[in-house]
Structures are given as structure tokens and as C-alpha cells.
Image (cartoon, rainbow, N blue to C red; front, top):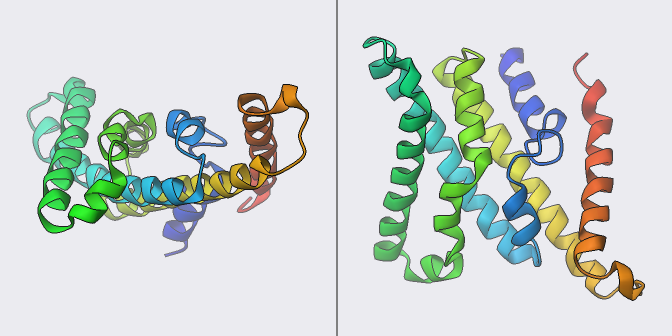
Length: 192
């Protein structure tokens, strides 16, 4: 059970996919202008990432490994991720039009989020079991959501801060992201 806790903590904080692995930077920089959109995107990504990682694990070990077609893993994972996003989009449109409208363009953008593909590939490359893959995916998604919300809240506050004109916008966002990344490096000693 401690192994699962370490996997969760490692994906959540120590090897955070955005601030330590530098995956998922497009939504991190593009969507985090407000905390609300960052939270909505993070939650949608959490669901997609967890479901896609588990389905990819099952299909990889159930189809590709027995048929010795493991070289098709990236193609399979991309199809699974795109399929999961499409199913969720259809489901939300039918059951919760308001949530579908709130997520808007952000839901289809999850398909191109490299963190989703990165988690599935890392889980397979680390030879994780199905339960470990689920915990790893949940930890990675929770870490992604945490960083998105923190950065969204930070950017909302910085909009009202007296910042020199040369630093407004993208320069300040990049500096803030670098400082957050340095702060998350402090978690590197946990678990050693």
C-alpha cells in the first residue's frame, strides 16, 4: 500500500507533469488566465487522463502484447484519448448542456494535451499494474489540476498588481511559472 502512496505523491508533487516534466504547458500557459477556467480544464483533464490511461493499459496488455504489436502503442493511445474525449463530449452535450457550454473549446483541446499521452506512455514504460496505472494517472491529473488552479489564481492576482509595463502579460507569466517550478523542486527530497 505504501507503493501506491509513493506513486500518487510522486505524480502529484515530486514529478509534477507540468512543473517538473514540462508536459501540458500549452493549457498551463493558455487557459490559466482565470481560476475558473483552469479548474474546469483541470477536472475535465483528470477524468480524461484517468480513463484514457486505464483503457490504454487494458488494450495494450490485452491486445498489443499478445499479438506482438507493441510498436503500435502510440497510435493506439492517441486513438483511445481522442475516443474518450469524443465520448465525454457527446455525453456532456446530452446530459449537461451547461457544463458542455462552460468547457466549450477546452474539452476538445484535451486531445492534444501531451500530458495525457505522456502519462499513458510512462505508465506502460514503467511496467505498472492496472491499479498502479490508475493511481499514477489520478496523481498526475490531480497534480495537473493543482498547478492549473494555483497558476490561474496567481495570474488573477497579478492582473491587479502594480507591475512595470515591460513585464505585463507573457513575461510575468513565464517568470511566475519558473518560480512555481522552482518551488515544486523543493518536493524532490520527499520519499528518499
